[in-house]
Image 1: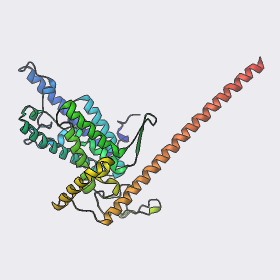
Image 2: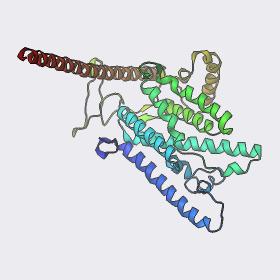
Image 3: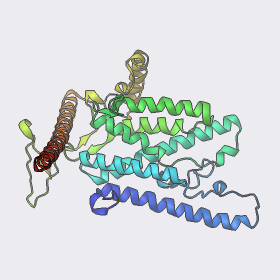
Image 4: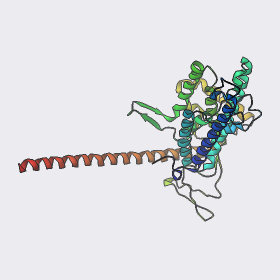
Length: 357
């Protein structure tokens, strides 16, 4: 069984993985062709040094090729980065489409988060290189899948905030909501100590904040993402969910903007020890954004609806985990019964052989 079988892939996964494979392959072919042509004139040219400015995110040439803000999201040149981006896109898009129920929203999320993150990265890289008078790094390619990696981590925090990740039979146990902060610290130290540059810290931090603000204040969904998406030929479809009796009018459903739930506050991404310092900073940033008209404050009704959606998501996740646990327990019971039955049969056969002797 392969994860690459088309009928097992959600539509968003097919499109995003197709873009990643197609653009990365095109980049590889163009780099190789240019490398071959440059070898005749430059003896010491390396394949890694060949750049394709109309596909790759290069600070100096981005202003002339603004479409690279989007194309470079799916442009990977190394095998390791391509495989990693492929896995992230496959798992992330499959997970997000399952909850959001709309493949276009998943694709839009990746493109919006990736392109804005790339724009921020380019602007900061240009300013930094001008201050340091470093013209060489103005021609270094940036971008790639790192522009959306943190986006899917924020999605996980939004949809399953209290989910525990258990590794090595319980030796390592942590919650999903703590992963983004831990990785930001790790990548920041990597940039300071190892790479000694703004990369990969800046695109990672940028991806984190861009994806959070998009999901918190701007994402629009036409249907309740935690309820099944019904298809029917009638004009109106009503779907009941458990004891809550929620209903969806598929054609007249209201558009939900953002996620105002209490479990999806920005401060919840950070450890308790940092919150006394970060809370007033985030509050001032929020007040300035409201004053400038960048975001719209949530009213009590929207917060209540968002909390209800978050509660439903948690109930759905808990039920799924219970079903998986029951399935695992049943398989273990069947295996244990089979082992006992085999042992009894062997002992019976051995006793029969002794009796015959």
